[in-house]
Image (cartoon, rainbow, N blue to C red):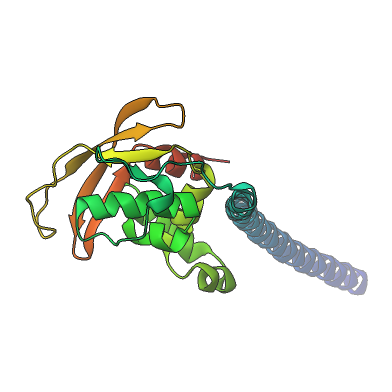
Length: 240
């Protein structure tokens, strides 16, 4: 009887020990599974976030490529203007407009018209003025997100925006123009903003006054703000 009792006790202890080991292993397994599931959930969330960012920037790149294509199409379809010779009343023929730099506001506006009509994004990049608070940081962040080969292709954030602007603002053909607002006395080192008022003469003889441009001094001459910069900027950076 004593031997049977001892055998039974040993058997019970072995069973208990085996159960404890089983429970311990099961708990370790469950903890491991839970940890893996947690890491998996975190990784899935991260991948979804990364995919969303990639999709967003891919859409932006598609817009950039679309702008480039639009510019190419505009260049191919641009035609010579049937403009008159410069008249004696102060109007300048569109075909006589030149890239004269931006040392004065009058030079700035003529150069701006020349760059728009010739789709010269390099010149536009130098003279278009972006808002330093609301526009420039967003444009710089977008430029930084471009692949290195795309950054090398454009060179600067301003060049990217010049492409966007030119693609969305194809040339308007009129015959002649003249600036009717006075040349500002402020030097380019001042902080003044000057309205540029212009009269445009069309081929049928109509003359219309426009004032949707402003000149802002900078360290490198005058820069131009146009009424259509904001729509072009907002359209490109609209959420996809």
